Picture 1 (cartoon, one colour):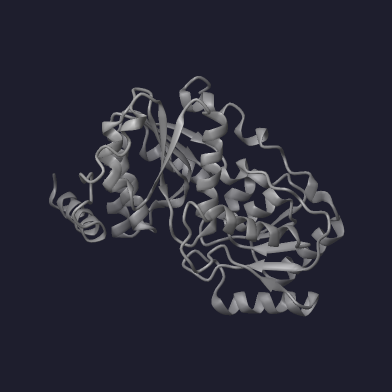
Picture 2 (cartoon, rainbow, N blue to C red):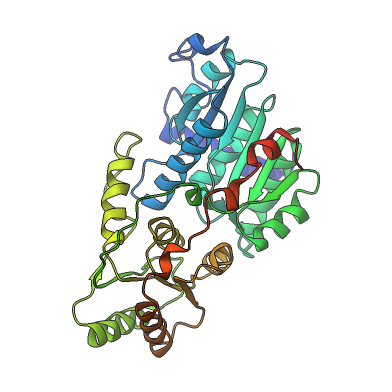
Length: 359
């Protein structure tokens, strides 16, 4: 082990020690917690969030729905991102030979969200005897010295796992994974939220806007404010929404919170958003959507899965006049939002692919 690797290991250890005192990393409490599952084959669905981002909670819900539908012969055990450390030993104790670990996808692979990335590495190291499926993800390791050190560490851990299947939800990530994890099975699949289908609504009115104000935003603060004002000037009162709701969401409350937002989207004539899941939520609720790019490739390439849907319009260079033109075109197009591809368009044979039968 190099000195640099030792420092990264120490940093990970200290972070976990602070977050999970006395029971961090495969602690002993509840060692028999999952013993009732010993004779049952199961899928451990993990990296489940507890923060306020409904996009990530929708991924978790969609992933569980997919497993329940497509792997109905398996038990499903959901383990939160903050619980996998203390339950890992009990889960391994209850292992069935056919058990698998599914890691939910999203945009947290890389150095942008350290806790999620380090937890993913812990899972991959700890469950080395299991088949692990990384569900569709976007990878972003920055070109900074820190980002490249994190990439080096990730490559070592990911490549050491003998049965790690990785899914990329965009072309850039797909090529990145093929380059850095050359011995892994790599697949390209859309975001899991497209597995969900929600009831559509015929009567719609008004414009809804959801624009990021964080490190993933392409627009500067003044550009965001000017765009919002331009839409108001053109269409009168404009309502805003966010997929980060300002309170922690649990596995028991996530569907209720998601349904609140989906109900709001169903009533809009057009949505304007630069959030990937703002776009995808529009897709599954049949809501016309003007899509603005984010700071990286995530939204633009995520749009490629929906480019043939008439109710979706991408504005890569979000000048006000282009956004206003796209809104007007969608309003004039009427009910074309009903032409969303069926679930099978994206997920046919995914179980067979995961099992290695259709690759």
